[in-house]
Image (cartoon, rainbow, N blue to C red):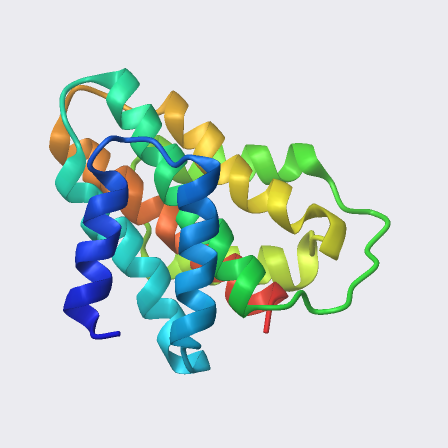
Length: 175
């Protein structure tokens, strides 16, 4: 599948701002069919954010649904094409994850230092065990909803922040 065909596929999914169980299964089937190489996975995820940003509106409910759609695509990529790094961190703190995300979203930007902190957080400070990876990713979207606004630029920045969080999580906790 070409990059353009995949972009069209994503746009079709975003068109109604909902991902049904059938569409979720179709995403997984498409990923299995395409069998993307590991170096294409970042592109698959980031494209969901980039293309998703085309569907942002001034409607908070619609934007909330858009975040859910992007989350479903990212979930499909992670569960179909990636595996968790074995980790049994018994000291993992959900509250610390949520606190970090709110801190990141406060100014709606991620600089180099914050990006390093994200990697450090997931790699050493509060590494999620495999059983908490879905929570850790989904929390970025769930908390991101709190920061949606009527301003398109702010919402695009929010998507960039969520993408950076998910990227750090995937790069440190998944293969």
